Every structure is written in structure tokens, then in C-alpha cells.
Image (cartoon, rainbow, N blue to C red; front, top):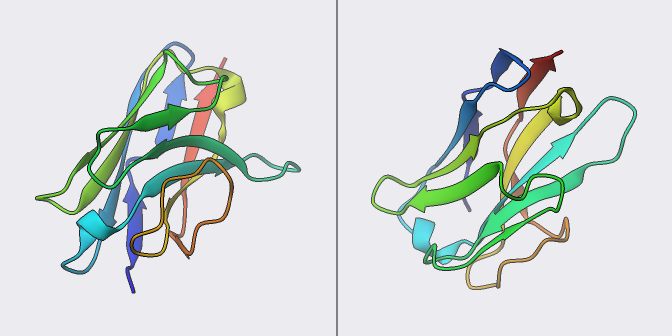
Length: 124
């Protein structure tokens, strides 16, 4: 089992940048495909980005493509989400998630482990 802790959220003006970190416990971080999701008030949780176990493959929602970058450092058991050119519609609670060991990356919400979330607020 893995435990996930997000950090790096906050308040930023439109056009600004933030980086979210997701620290994972345990020694088998490379076993987990990882993803970022977000949920705005009154809306369903939506896919943002995902990364394969090796980091060699990445996937993005159309709404963030070209602005956000997902990456991971397997030596540090940490995944990142670099968010640039932020827009007010990016305001949400952002969650990191991990799939069961050995299962492939996916853009669906079928992740088995979730962090507690971190708030990102983009002001206009």
C-alpha cells in the first residue's frame, strides 16, 4: 500500500505558475502508474494528467495540454505537476493518485490510492 501527500497549492494570479508535489511512501514507487485529478466546487472530479511507471509516457487532458507538465523522480518517490499560464477555470482541489502495482496508466478515475488534495486558486 502507498500513502500520497500533495503540497504546493495556493493562490496565484491568472497567467502565473505553480508546482504541485506528490510525495509517496514506501519503497516501490516505480511499481505505480500515477495521475493528477482535480475537482472544482459543484463539479465532478476530472482527469488532468497521468504518467507511466518509468515516466516515459505522459497523458494530458485537452484543457491543460501545452500548459501543464507532469513528471516524476523515482529516486525521490515524488511526482510533480508544473502548471503554467494558469487560468481562473483551473481553480480546484488537486489530487494525486496511484494505480495498483503493475497496472497500466489510465486517464480514467480508476486509481486505487488517493492523496488528501491541495487547493489551487487562480484569481482573475
